Each structure stands twice: as structure tokens, then as C-alpha cells.
Image (cartoon, rainbow, N blue to C red):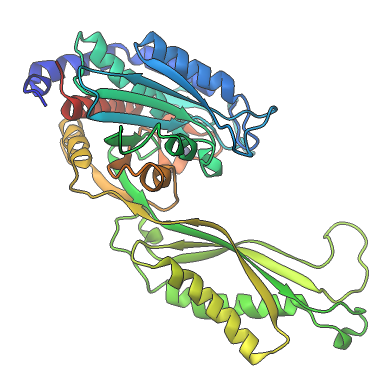
Length: 429
Ligand SMILES: [Zn+2]
């Protein structure tokens, strides 16, 4: 790092430049929001990737388009296209990579504004994806552009990527890029994922996730003579009872030391996501004892919990039921396993962004962890880049809601934090 990059006059000039290009940044954000990149199914990804790529090229980056070849989500009708821009300084390392996902969740009901018009009212920019997380993409691109327009050249390398499918697991997005080596410890030093963290907080990581399905089996019989059959629904009810009365109280005792926000999410938890069994709800019913039933569970686990134990205690409940009732037949399937991740709060990236945020807000940012997962798992576990955090202008509580919006002031403020962070980490010529 050069002394010059941290000199007050250089910083002052860059911060002023961020403000000067603020309206350009917001117009670009509006353009992003006006492309309805709804996932599922993954619409208009190519147009959005090209919009980001075009802007990056205009701002001096070499751009690469990375299609998710070989991923089953990547189809002719809904192609999965990621974009990555790279701007090398006089040195290849360190390399700071900004990543933002440009897919958005479906609109849902209850909107009072057009979700894709990107209207501005009272300092708020409305639209699906405004907070989660197209604002973060605009902020990081213009943060670096402010440095360039101040006539400065960063010494290290900056990369910016726009990726797909974060909302559905990120396998064709960040995971794919990491697998191909685009985000990897042999070229990438720091990753900032620009998810909504409320501008003055940052996320060090997230909890673990275990989705699993339990299916119970019985024997079909006529509903007027249920004693001749075995009800798979009764089996499921017994299991759900034990989940509620044995597992849940035990999970409620387990609290993580990781600063997960909101604090209610610092406990281990389980939720029933779906339940099935018997005849379809619509249509004619015929009298039958249900021979197949089941449920899908969403278990969130803590950094302090071991995954094998997490799965083992569910299995133990099922075995206990089978021990009491030999007719209790079941099977249990894993659907998704995400290990918790947490970046070292004392690493260079966290300290650089913390100092930068302190300069802007007059206080250190809150170091938190996310209750749900995001693409950090792929950066850390597939790309093996350990210094990765989430930081962005969006409002976390606005994510996925009707009338989703972001504060324009936050977008500009976060770009200032990002610009100072880049100066600190990469230095200037
Ligand atoms: Zn998001």
C-alpha cells in the first residue's frame, strides 16, 4: 500500500467524485431494475449480463462472459450467463473482487408501484431487486469508477462480477465461476459480495443449512376399515410430535457466539417447509388409508454444531419411533447441505472495510452474520478464498417484500465505503 492512497487529499477527491457521479450511478441502477431478471425461472439474464458487461467495458475493464455450460439449469430457453470484468493495475495481486447477483425473486402480491419501473419517490428507489441486490452492483462499479475519474490508477487488480441464480442456490452462478477458477485463491485475495447489509453493517458469514425429506410408509386399506391398514400419516404425526416436543426445545437451548442478525436467529432452528400425504386436496376423495406421507424440513445449524450430529439427532428420533413401533417404516433423504462459513473478523479485508466505514459514519460498522445463506459458501468452499464478506447498501428487511426499495443516499454512501476500501487494499500508483 502506498502512503499516497491514504492521503487525506486523495481520499477527499475520490469521495467528492463519488457524489459527482451519484446521479449516473442511480440511472444505471434504474436500468438494471428495469430488466425483470426473475428467478425462477431465470428470465432476461443475457440482457442483464450484457448491460453490466457493457458498463464495465466502458469503464476500462476487460470483460468475460461465463455461461454455465454443463449445469442443468442452463437451458436454451433460460440461459445462465455470468459476467466478469477485470482491471489490472501495475500488479496482478492483490486482487479485490466485487460480486453481486442480478437475479431477483418473483414479484408476489401487494405492490403499490410498478415493480420494474424503478420509480423514485422521497429519496427511495423502488423495484424488485432494488435492495436485493442490484443497488450493490451499481455501487461497486461506480465506487471504482470514481477512483478512475479522479485520475488515479490502482496498483492491484479489481474485478467485478454479476452472477445468476443466487436466489436458487448459486450453482450456475458463483459456484460455477469458482469451479472454473474465475474466483479462486490462486488469483483472488479479497471478495466483497454486495448483498444488502444495511450500509453500516457487514456480514462475516452465515449459518449452516440442512434440508431433508422424511417419508413414512404404511399400508393402504379401505377408509371404512382402517384397522386393516397402516396409516403413513399417523407415523408422520408421531414424528412431527417428537420434532416439536423433543428436538425443538433442545435446539432452542443452543445459541451461537457468532453475531447473527436478527438476534432471534442466533439459535439453532428447524422449520417444516412442506408436508404431503394422501389424496390431492382438489378433486374427488375416495376412502383410503394413506400408505405414503412425509415432510420436508429446513434445519438451520450453528458454526458450533457438527453436521454429522445435526443429521444424527434426526435419525435418532426416527429410530426411537421404530424401536417403539416395528410397523413404523420411513426413509430419510438429504436434499441440501450448506456448511456455515465465517471470515476471520481480524483479517485484512474486514479491517480495511471497517476503517473505511468508520471514516464515513464516525463509528465502526457492526460485524454481523446472516441468518440465511448467500454465495459466500461457494467463494470459501469452492474457490477457497477465505477473506470474503458481504457488504452493500440494500436494506435487508426489504429483500423479497412488496414495494421493495433502497435509499438513494445509502447507495452513494456505500460506494464511498467501497472506494476507500479499494484504495486501502490495493494502493495507488
Ligand atoms: Zn440477495
